[in-house]
Image (cartoon, rainbow, N blue to C red; front, side, top):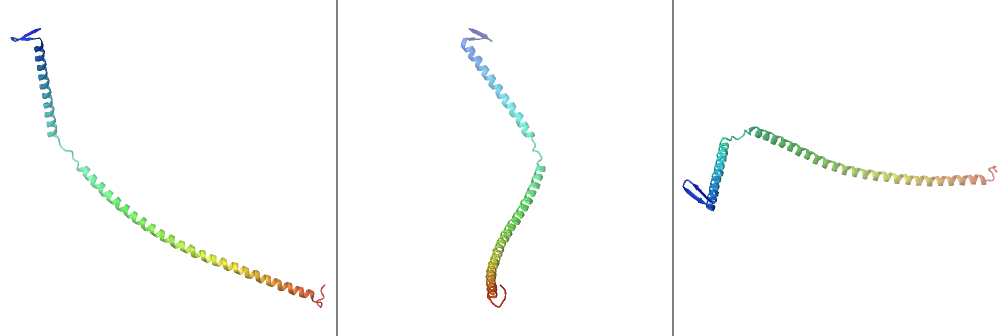
Length: 148
């Protein structure tokens, strides 16, 4: 197959190679143009960019930092008070335990005394009972008593 264009004759495979090369060159040029056009658009956007006003956020952050600082101070104070209370409670518990031990000792001593008194009274009753029994027997055994 032979193609003639402006006085040039192209035969078979050469024509398709040249046509392919022209297509590749045109496609490459178009791609380069699109990249350059996108670059120019991006450059214009970057140059027209203005940073947003973040001063309001900076103020809010400063306020939050101040509030967090005051909250941390309060937490620290509460922690100190709780620690002091815990120490006081421990000391109070130790004192209460000592008081309970002392009271237990007093109660045990009183119980021992009461038991000893009960034993003494019981022994005294036994002695009195024996004395009364002896006097009753003596009175009953007395021939002069007149009771029979």
